[in-house]
Image 1 (spheres, rainbow, N blue to C red):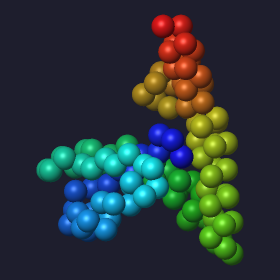
Image 2 (spheres, one colour; image 1 turned 30 degrees about the horizontal axis):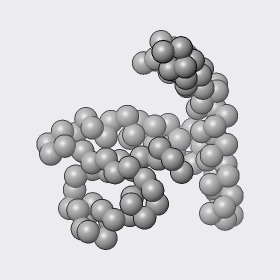
Image 3 (cartoon, rainbow, N blue to C red; image 1 turned 120 degrees about the vertical axis):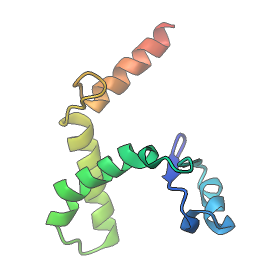
Length: 107
């Protein structure tokens, strides 16, 4: 998957070489919090909380595949197309992405 980012904290559990090699194995870009900066993970933690509270805590999944399918659908349909985001001017993420690519093509 091109452009996939693996962001983790800087804790000891993320420092062993086995873990550090995983992003390369899956063609991901590695990202790690800076030492002492707890705000680096804030957007990822907020997004994870949205998914858990909006979907996961209200369901019991029969299989891992079913969970992946439902969570992906929730992200693609609800989060990206129906949930406006404050930061990019209260637009849907899908609209923001389209505007970004249009601006990029115009340059």
